[in-house]
Amino acid sequence: MRILAFDSCGKTASVAVYDGKVVGEVYIDTKQTHSATLLPSADWLLSTLGMKVADMDYIAATVGPGSFTGVRIGMSAAKGMAAGAGLKCIGVSSLYAAAYAAKDCKGLVCAVMDARCGQVYNANFKVDNGSMQRVCEDRALAIDDLIDEVKGEKQVFLIGDGAALCRDRFAERGVGCAVANAGRVGVGAGDVALIAAENAESAVSPEAFAVNYIRLSQAERERNAKLQNKNTEEIK
Image (cartoon, rainbow, N blue to C red):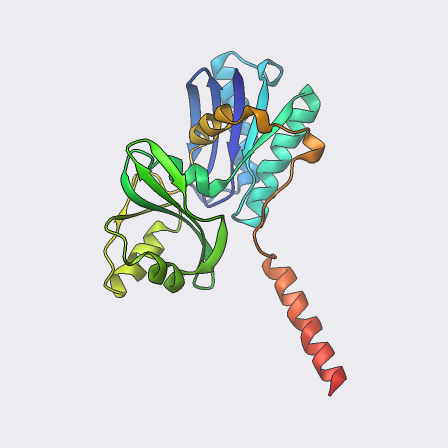
C-alpha cells in the first residue's frame, strides 16, 4: 500500500510517502505560507523517491481542527491530487496525529493546538508504551479548563504547536507536565501516513472528503456577533 500524506493544519507543514513504511518525509517550520511550500515539497519528495501521484493507492490529509486557511490548503491539495489520479482520500484528525508521535510515553497525552484567545484545540489520550486510548473527542476549550480537567493525573504530556503555550500556563497554575517530542512543534505527515494505513477502510471519494473545523472562523464569529448586536438593537 502506498500513501501520499499531507499536514498543514497548524504552524508547520509536512508531506510524507508511505510504502509499507514511511519512506520519505518533508517537514517545514518556517514563516513561509503553506500554499508556497506544500505542493513543491510533495513534488520534490515524489521525484526524489522516483514515484508519481499515480503510483499511490490513497491520498491522506489531516482534516482539522486547526488553522482554517491551513486546513483548506492541505485538503485542497489532497482532493485535487486524488481526483486527478482517480484515488480515494483518508482523513486523519490533526490532534490524533500529534498525539501519535507520543504513543511510546506512559500517562495522559494532551494534544494541543493554539486556537488563539486563550483557547486550544485539544484531544486527550491515555497512552502506555504504544497503546493509545482516546479520552475525549476533538474540541476547543480554554487552557484553564484543560488544566482543571487533567490536574489530578499522575503524568501529563503536552504535544502539538500549543504545547509551549500550555506548559507556561500549567506552570503558572502549579500543575506539573512535560512536553513530549519537544524537537518537533507540529504534526509530522509520516504519522498521518501511518494512521491512514491503519484506517484504509475509512477512505472516501474526493467529493466526500470533509473538514472538521470544530468551531466557526474568526470572521464568521465576528459576523454573527454583529448580527446579534443588530438584532438586539432592533428589539430595543
